[in-house]
Image 1 (cartoon, rainbow, N blue to C red):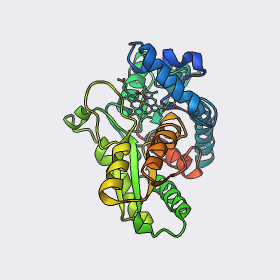
Image 2: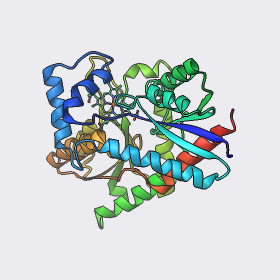
Image 3: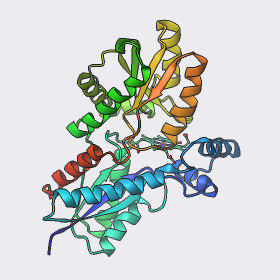
Image 4: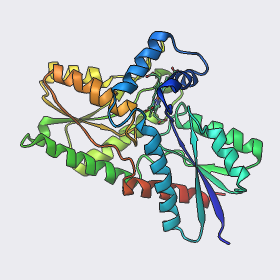
Length: 310
Ligand code: FEC
């Protein structure tokens, strides 16, 4: 029979229903329950987004299925079985590892549905999976980042080029392209974290491939934790380019995210859109990757590359 390889596909996770938002939020806050105001604020944001309350769950399910199909089609000499492991919701990362062991998996690869490595993001997923796998004696290798994979750059560049067409006759150099990703606390800079530089590398690669010269990077979705987070925030970017440079057209491309979820559907499509309207900016956003075949190919490649590593 063919060698069987377990693939732990890790992603952020989302609540399954509105009454689970509190438990989810408490988990994100490392066991500290939110105040009633914080909980209401988050619940309101979930209620405001289109495409159902928790599109991330369905999108992640589809990505995991898509990756499994793609891996088995690309490498028929192996039997790939994908398992989900979520950071803040059921099934948790540890559950996914445990399930692999229960199913008799003896060789595994872990990958995160986020292209850029930070010790605070992808590093956290890997640490938890590694610890559980070590406890259960499962050999596992990890993909750390894939932010310059040619198929990923192609998929994102296609989206930028396509979405630029929504600005009609506006000359390309009058449209400011803003690449964004989730902000993190500023202390990652002291840790020499690769996250900011990897994000700039992705941005430069897309700009080069699409011939976009009028671009910049901006952060989004910073938390309110009482410590400084990386900036400038996208809302401040909009304000600044409007008042200081009279920019009237902005295309946001959230390169740090691969799926439709709260941070895209609320933070960009509702919050940033409202800010742009107030400034009379025409704002568009590139569509999320979701199960784009080029993204599935990217994941299949980087997972397969780690199979030889053990
Ligand atoms: O659609 C959904 O249900 C979930 C959307 C979602 C994604 C996501 C991705 C990232 N986060 C990252 C870092 C942090 C840090 C904190 C933090 C807090 C939240 C809260 C919600 C939330 N995040 Fe998230 N994140 C998503 C959702 N995130 C909700 C809590 C309320 C709020 O602050 O808005 C701060 C934790 C703390 O309080 O100490 C840090 C990073 C990513 C991108 C990489 C990845 O996907 O893992 C980094 C999707």
